[in-house]
Figure 1 (tube, rainbow, N blue to C red):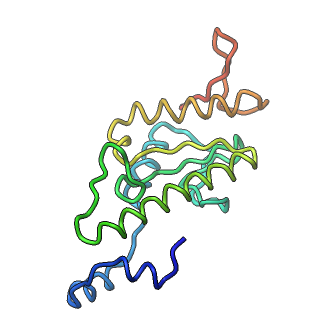
Figure 2 (cartoon, rainbow, N blue to C red; figure 1 turned 180 degrees about the vertical axis):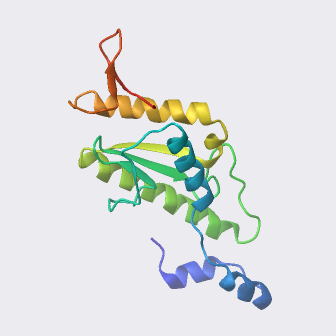
Length: 167
């Protein structure tokens, strides 16, 4: 990890007006992406999830009963291989920033798995195809819930597997 001095040396000089403007911008997180996913979960009448559960990495959504943590990763901030375009200004800083985010994501995933949680990560762009995202989440819940008994979302299939119902 770079010290603050090293980080400052890597950064290109910034116009003071631009710096003042950027300082006024306040983070809103991935609020719209989260609300999009929450709306889909509600539309599917899937319950049992919580937002921002106090776990490593603070998952965007979590299903505590089945120990499934869901992260909605922004394509820019986490360096999506499909969508990410590196900024031309201050390129070295942004490259390192995205690498640190990816490294932290892997560490968080490991911590959660060590605690017995399943981790599902969605790229922001993948939420544009709701059916695919829903199927991935459904499979993760199915895998996590199959060992549990007396859960109201489960129904055995012909194969003997169990599946969370979305109604």
